[in-house]
Amino acid sequence: MKNLGQMMKQAQEMQTRMQEMQERMEQTEITGAAGGGMVTVTMTAKGSARGVKIDPALMDSSETEVLEDLLVAALNDARAKADELQAEQMKELTGGLPLPPGFKLPF
Image: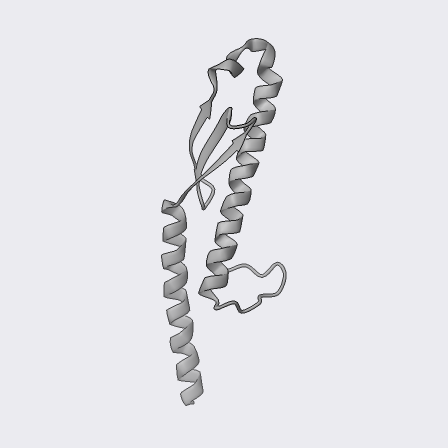
């Protein structure tokens, strides 16, 4: 029974560390860019948008499609960076323990 108690304690510690990591991810800002920095998007590592900056040169009405494409690219860049940061944090949290593909924490 000693092992079960120790496992429960470890699970509680991991849950606490997971909560702390989630809070850090909500505060951490990631910036994605497209078009050589003409469009930048800032979001939290959890995916909440915080801001968008657009170079005034793109404000021409004939450039609408280009601007739309660059916004999507900048959002995707920021999301990819956020996902990478979360994966790094999760690896650190689990001590490098390989989790099965598709296994997400928290449950």
